Length: 442
Image (cartoon, rainbow, N blue to C red; front, side):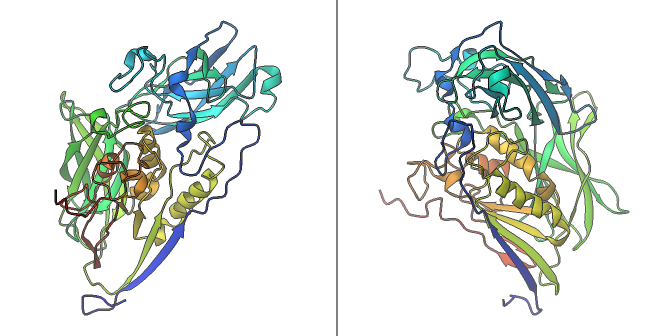
């Protein structure tokens, strides 16, 4: 590869791609098609109320993150006097999920559905105990991440296509649901600039966001952060605008400037509350970019179509989660040999279920908090009819690019286009064909 500078630049580009092997899970009477988001299999608007004293469900512990953790395991215990292999457990967040919170815009039905918000994850009741259909008692161990609200668990019968609500659990929550989580690094427009983006439950009227950072032995520096979010009306269609909607929280981006080349920096996320106290994340670190044209070896990871997986086995989609989690784990294991990551589209496969963006940023946090995680959009982020996408499909589930361009920083003049330009030793121009480049002559 020729370099625009007068020195030799070595690049080791490691390409990986998801290989998907489809296999129907045994004992689970549902089938999915390629490209479908698992949560879309739940006919949540058809859910009916069938509460009974002979069915119960409870979750413990009630308080999570006592030592500042951003994720925690929860044990859910349940029983049902008429058990079936069709029974399943749903995780809702916020914990209150009945029809009183429904948004009825464009809902052609006169009656308010009992439940109008999809769960953030689900699992079949017999997942951990295949004898559940005989005993009517079982438990599940589920993994939760801090998502700015409380959680509740619900026991359903009737499978995913005809859900009947039998019991609702107690609510549980993290000690500080608003805590800053999931930093995502990205190169800035200048070679000696790093951006840090993260998610929290603090809008700017509640707390001032910033990053505290330093190089080893250096003086601590505070850099302010800008804050963005998006609302239901920013979505272009369903399910993102209906059953898949969940508030994304507030997305903060700070710009760390004038970095020394090839230098390790430590940083942590901060929020200054109105009472003068501080909320801090844990400490992270990254290595700054080399000087442009520097004679050295640089390892670049390029992949696409990864998606989001659940380590507790929930939301299983035709048994492909092990592949994407293997890719994630391999990247984590090889972090010392990785300088930058390019995720070139089809990022989460949230497909309009906004809660899954939180799940994905938590999945890649060990990577994205350590090396630059650069993205472009794919059809599953951008495509929606009459919204400026090149293709007129509905693969984004109504997201039309909004979550992707907000959740991750892209060094572009027009972030909605995802055409960016930045320098990592050499000058790079990531491009995508998803936003239409055609000129409207009408």
